Length: 215
Image 1: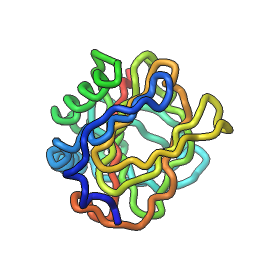
Image 2 (image 1 turned 180 degrees about the vertical axis):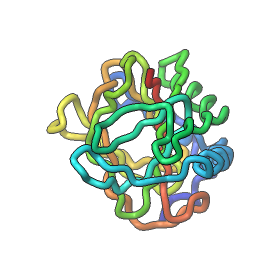
Image 3 (image 1 turned 135 degrees about the vertical axis):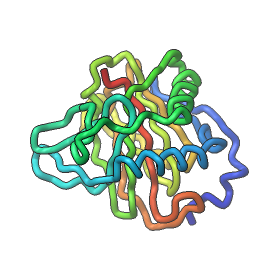
Image 4 (image 1 turned 45 degrees about the vertical axis):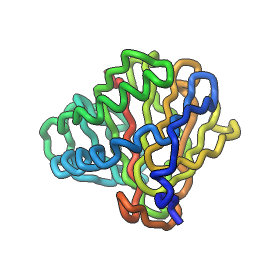
């Protein structure tokens, strides 16, 4: 069972998971439908694709971007760029409902004034995962990361300053938002293999919106 049958009963709550890191339970529940509609509009312009790492590995997670900058990976490395490599044109503009949610979530977690210029959109299907990594391609490490979950529940792994540090395992439901910055900004994090399931809003997948200040 995906847990979405009880989504209407969830009450927004804030939980500290580390110094500088906050789990905002059900924070995006009230705007989930609007977020998904905006996501569909964005990915109609910049379709999902499975990118390749510099080492030649094809990622199990499909990705797209919106905003002034988009995060990409290929044989040349990890980086932000203004143009979609597939189309050669600028990434779609960031929808206002995206920007507003990111700013509100950051403020709720103690990071006021957050104005993201990039949103990486990840699509997970059962079997997809994201290995432990750091978000370190951004130019301003004083700005937080805001991560929004939509659809199937997933086990989020929030580690320490080293890849070998034991990670906290968090079951993120649709509508949950995790914000980390300050002393937690460069902590390793990832997503365990997504389990089979079906969600009332997204069907057989999970979407993750990751907001950043890239430049």
